[in-house]
Structures are given as structure tokens and as C-alpha cells.
Image: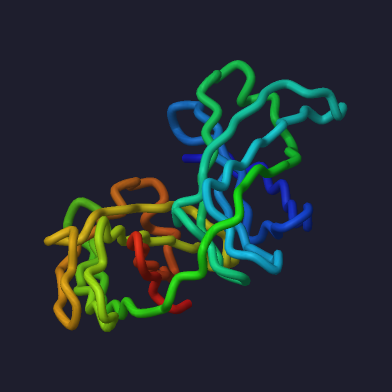
Length: 208
């Protein structure tokens, strides 16, 4: 079973705010930092990189990790899940807290022209599938359409993120595409109490 380290971190740094964080060791000894990033600036943001510094109980730095947001471009006040991974097992077991910093570029506001309809179901192996469809309500094709599922426990913490491209990946105007994403971490599946779906294409986003 994963060891929850209960490092509750919420901070506003520059253009972003972090929420719903979850720091835990998985059964393989890898350290996961999951959460959500909110664009609180007055501009859309793209190419967002999150840098984490991990510390031990004495406040000493023991490791670093970095990663990008799951949503490729964030409008103002838009939220994206993220996951950072520390694979050095000897370092991971020493971590008790973390701090974050960010890098980004100004982007272009996207219209909320993608509508998703979905339903979830567990299978006999403990995996959770979310199947649905995405409707492009915009006037132009939605290209490279990515579906992002964020899964939460009963405390509202992020416990997993799953992504898949729509089929077809490019959705013409006023048409739709199907998708299927899976949460295949058996040790976390029983803890899932809720999920959200975001659809992100080159041109559009789904509303939150």
C-alpha cells in the first residue's frame, strides 16, 4: 500500500496557485507528487513547467523533479492536473515536504467549444474505465484532441491522472469523437470517489 506522507501544500507563486496536492510513495518505492495548478494571472499561459524541491524532516534538500501540466495551454482561472515523479527510492523515503516554482509563456485564449459526455465503470480486475464522446461545437476542426481524467479520493486530493487521444484525434466542426481512458493503479482504485474530465485541443478547451 502507498504511504501517504500528508504534506499539505498550497501556495500562490507569481501567476499560479497549487491545490489538491497529494504526496505519497507507491508500492515500488517511487514518490509521486500530484495536484492541480490554477492559472491566476491576467493572461493565458502555455509551455508551463513545474519544478519541485523535496526536503526531509530537518528541512534539508534531498531531491528535485520537474514536469509539465497535463493541459497544454491554460486560460485565465483554468485548472490543470499535474504529476511529478521521483524514482530514486533511497531519496524518496526521506522526503517529508516540498516547494514549487514555475516557468511559463504567455499564450492565446481558447474558446470553450468542446463538450464531453462520459460515464465510468469498474471491471473485475479493479481498473476503472471512463468512456464517452467529445462534441466539437466550434466553427473550425479541433486538432490533436486530448482527454484528461483526474481522479480524486474522499478528501478531494488528486490520486491519479489518465490521458488518451480522441478517436478520431481531429474532430471536424459540429461532429464528435469517442474516447476511453483507464485508471489502472489497483492500489489506488478503491480510494476513488470522484473524477473530472478535461478536453484540450490545439484550438479549443472544454469548460470546467
